[in-house]
Amino acid sequence: MILIDNEKDIISLTQDNDVAILDVRTEEEYNEGHLDNAINVDVLGKNFKENISKFDRDKIYFVHCAVGMRSKKASGIMEKLNFKYINNSKFGYDEIIKIIHSGGK
Image 1 (cartoon, rainbow, N blue to C red):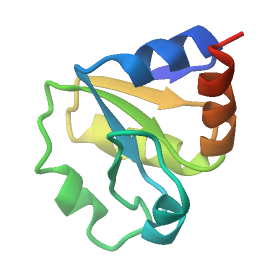
Image 2 (cartoon, one colour):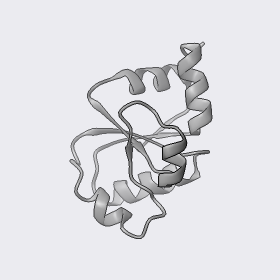
Image 3 (cartoon, rainbow, N blue to C red):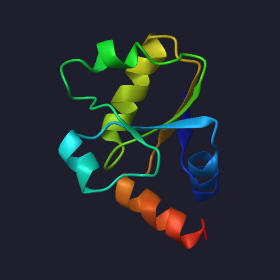
């Protein structure tokens, strides 16, 4: 697992078509706003482990939530399930949106 803690990596990962963006917030939070092409899988949902197990373990993932705690938890679960390329954002959704709109500057 790689901790994404700089703005350039946020821009790069969110613009890369080979990267799957995982939004691990609740469905309600996701519906209030989400990154383009983000897939919502609620880490606090009772079926998270079962649902995430169906994903390709060889794909590159950018995992985020609202403030960074749930994405850390989700990334840890994914790591235990042998996902190879997990990029866990230290930035929450609102911060990521600001970074994208500023162009990472």
